[in-house]
Length: 93
Image (cartoon, rainbow, N blue to C red; front, side, top):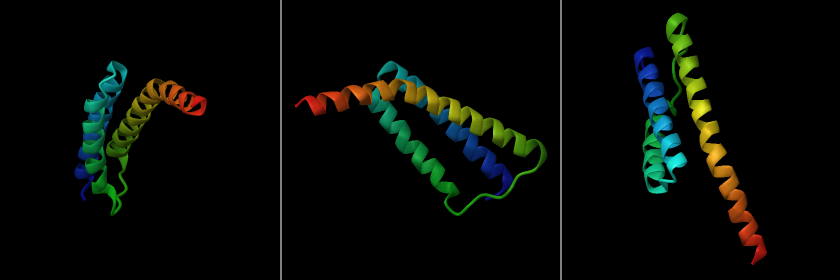
């Protein structure tokens, strides 16, 4: 995997996570699930490891990871309250 491949992978994952955020906020769980599968496949490219990046490429990778983390937080803001409701409903029965 080249440094350009690494950045391309992170760009793709950031885009998919942004779409997942929108789907979660809209309550589109079928769309969310499809995007999640796509993201899992895309992330699989990193299983063997990725080369270290330097300079501007390293900074771009950091920025993309921050974007991924922000999208993850937004998704959790939607799903965590819902999961709490499911848990309370299961405990009530």
